[in-house]
Length: 75
Image (cartoon, rainbow, N blue to C red; front, side, top):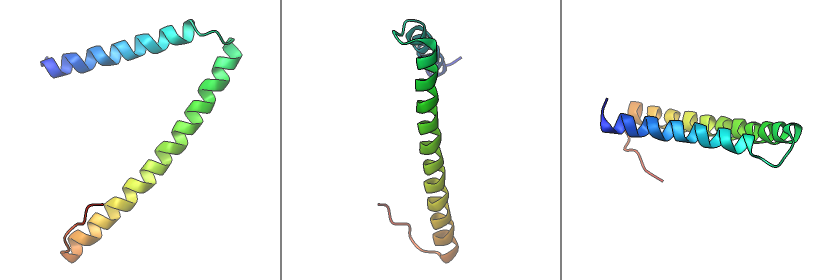
């Protein structure tokens, strides 16, 4: 494996270990932790949906400009 792959794998494993330790050592009860996680995951789901829509819109703009032969303006 390359150094970059090893570094990425180490980072991912560290993130998982940190998240696990955080959940196990959290001062909140299990029920409170689950509610908080659900709330954060719902927010993340909404954010990802918004990002998906934004990216689809930008892709459509790029497609139209490519078909029309226009130059793409960066914002």
